[in-house]
Length: 237
Image (tube, rainbow, N blue to C red):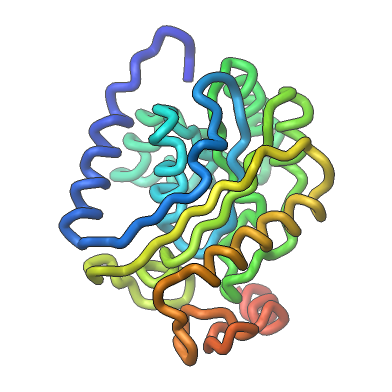
């Protein structure tokens, strides 16, 4: 966010989201929020299973009184409803045809002491496992000299995910967010491995095992496509 510019949009959006969570009685659990630094820049790198992930990932920074600036595809910023909100919250548009501009904006935000949220898989994982990750999160953390926070989100796919009907009014859905210890920027493989470990933890602790359910990964007895099947589905789109 530009220095001296107040956050007038973000706080009321958070308040509205929390009100909706209470109305729906979502069972939200956040583990590891203490790892989000109270000051200074950080890269929060989360897995991606739902169109709503950025809303829930931001909750991890609330105990530290931080606002996360998420990198999101530029089409979201062009929508007549979401666009003004995304710009007002000072999120960072990502245009894959001009990725360097987005990278520079994110780097500037980190150097200014902001927490930047990234979904390194770039797209939603239909298999509900961690796909191969892009290099941006690791590169940004290394160049800005800030901690990299691997993060897992689980349960949000039950509300709205790729290829499934929306269930935005479904009540009592458990949602788990796990923030891992800060890691020194290393490689994309290392980041993916750590994100999958955290996702495994979130799935193991989840109150509904979901065996035979569409929203559970195949390797846990669910009906979600395998990573190979998910890749084929993505290739058809």
